Length: 243
Image (cartoon, rainbow, N blue to C red; front, side):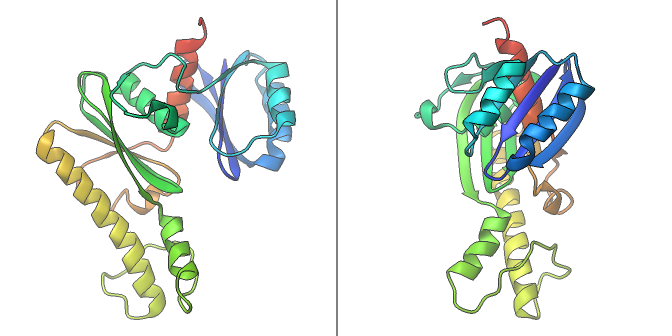
């Protein structure tokens, strides 16, 4: 069995796979990682290897504990990848984006695929039908936009994300919700539309922690998969276990 560990800025996502089938997903604070690892080892004794992806910071103690228990592979630009890349600066490509494109290469081979990850940032990654990663785009995420309105003005409040009930906000709060959520929706729809002008057979994957704000609001047809990144990490583990 495989364990994949995705370390973000504040949270750690862990998933257990049997082959390509995900059997458990768990999200914990970094401070609770060691406890979660103990639980997983007790419940799934068959886990023998792990894939580690670190975007934020990760303590040496937690990493050493993981490496003591399993054979650990660490995602990096130098590992064996299931796609070819035209990215000009591969050493700067985020590990989360590498995992997402790997999942697309595994699940949508020979298709033009746009992966949209709605998290801290909104990332757009394009893999063409010939298996070449061409790049994409990065823009501020939903929470980041709410925080920016508060931090860069004197009077606008900091709000939790909420789906607006109407296009026209009739208060400061509803205006902010309309501006942020509808702004992101129109952005994503517009970018999908621009890609479709060049690639009519485009497959679009929507994923990420804030994807639920957009899933039912987009005009374009999409496939929503909240576990796409974890599936990509597991696929990379399978591809690299003999290297």
